[in-house]
Figure 1 (cartoon, rainbow, N blue to C red):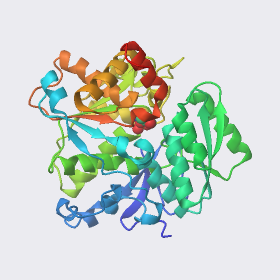
Figure 2 (spheres, rainbow, N blue to C red):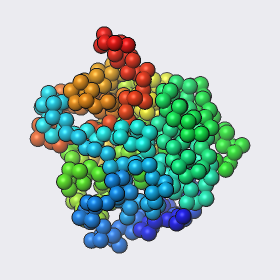
Figure 3 (cartoon, helix red, strand yellow):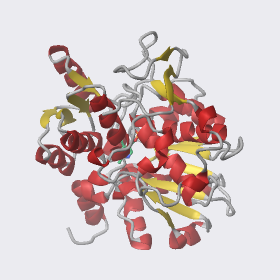
Length: 402
Ligand SMILES: *Cc1c(COP(=O)(O)O)cnc(C)c1O
């Protein structure tokens, strides 16, 4: 297995700028502990890697091979990426936004967009000789890791909070991963995983932004939006933000696309959507801070948004400000209402995290923050099928069948 793709230049620290060789196994910056990002030899790609070369390529994220850190290989793909960008005419009409779309990530392997990041991260780890991978996760990252580890023949060790939705646990178990259930939140699960790794140092952690390659998988969402909108970017993107990998990744994709000459300096306004019961980024954004304080007693039905402290908080906040975007918190009740409304108006089975973006759009629209002529993209990051307990609650409240 070739370990480094042709156009990878180096790994660069997102905070202090230190550069590292990409062939080695890397976690975070060895000087300051902040996330590393992949730098490509974009000058060598300018004029050669053009949008015109894309039609007819693989219908997966590997269609962007030139700007991915590992060479594509069908042996480690499960078909991740290249999800549909669906117009939302009925919802759009009701909200006065005729150019409303959803990027429906529920069609990814395992039913969540975590597949994108883990497909690339597991391939990169395996290419560097890693044989055991692990993560503490609210559910979907663990499930995706279990699937890709199985596909590549690696051992996976997973730490899940006790309240992780059952389908994510089953996904890990049926794929043969070693599963540890931990009382408390993702913070406790993370601590348990780190303690376990002290005794098992051979387990490579693919935790959010603690290795450089999950962001690379997630950034392909930005390339796909450009391609699927016919060679332009939307005006507004609403993204359900936990660790922020996708937000940081898409922003990186836009920078690469500008360096490649595909777009100019214009950017979408990026909106981080969080749950009111765990909104560290929203609070930090409103207070004008550069980093976000730990959120005590995090609680929300949107498991993927139950992230009290993100390693990349400073990157997320920078993207929101540079893009002239914003951050919005939504209640669990509004998330549930949005799940029902989305299914009933557009047939979309949104996860609570995805439904949070619709609830946030309703708030922004009422506040006059979005305009009728703007192209707006919501992200549905997983399928409702992974949250049976939440769907049951939604039905109970609607007075429908339980
Ligand atoms: C992990 C997750 C998120 C948050 O994604 P980040 O990129 O880590 O912010 C959102 N939705 C779902 C369904 C998730 O599993």
